[in-house]
Length: 366
Image 1 (cartoon, rainbow, N blue to C red):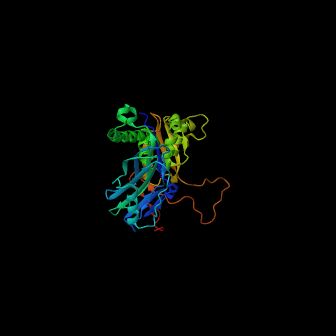
Image 2: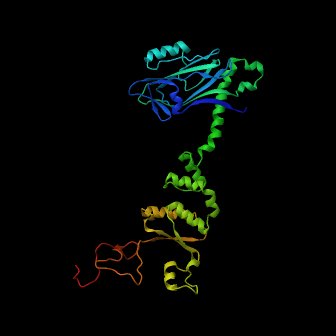
Image 3: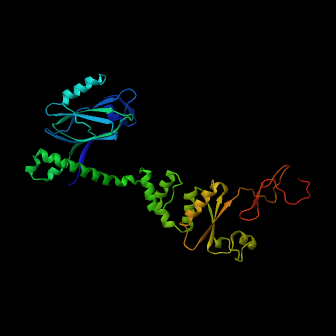
């Protein structure tokens, strides 16, 4: 079974404008029952032409927000012959509209958000009544009407195709099969990096070893979009810098041992470089601006993530650069100028002296 189904969809604002309606509010491309003014709303579609005499109208699906207290009644009338528009005055009272729908189609199909019409004829006229019994207002997003396509009975011997019961019975499984196939076919769209739902993209990011529960949706989408290129460069110098840029949004400086080897013959100041960068050939330094992290927790979170993005056996040390100005031989400071700022005196990892404390002196400073 190919499962090819042609459907007529009403799902846009311009589609609803072609219909007659009463009691609805237009919300973008959807219709919402105006529960503040009424408990019932009506929608009447224009005549639909199948182009085939004796056409059997099959499945009708309404998609939207419908609670247990929402009642949806469908009035369907099909006929052959000439195409005649059945006019409805949507300014009429609810009772008159309801009576005219009944005169046209007879008893409605109750609670029909997904139903089989079972009407035959070239032309079809549809009317709907929505009733709200609770505080939530029903919202209609889409109306889909099957107009042509495969059916399970099409693959049976001719004698079984004529049985109305067989068609109705198999229509249940036919609908289930088509819904399942549609869901499978639409699955790739749910993981599309540009339009997919963030819940699905977060699952995809875990498969790609992307951790980003602290980052914006746009940044995570960008990571997934460039995942292939990033994996090609992972563990290289360029790849590490790209990882830092993805996690912080900042351009970093990366200094490796051979960049400032204190023991190199041409090193201009061996003692300074050794004090700053040590002599461990397996250690490299990431230099970032002072305003990169809003808190210590963000900084530690970055370091934890980077451990999975550097080569095995290598050590990363993070250096947060303080803002400052470098003075050369021709720089001058005027009156009341200050270089630097108050800095806490740190005795060890757990003890620091801050604020305006003075150690030593002759006591004249307070």
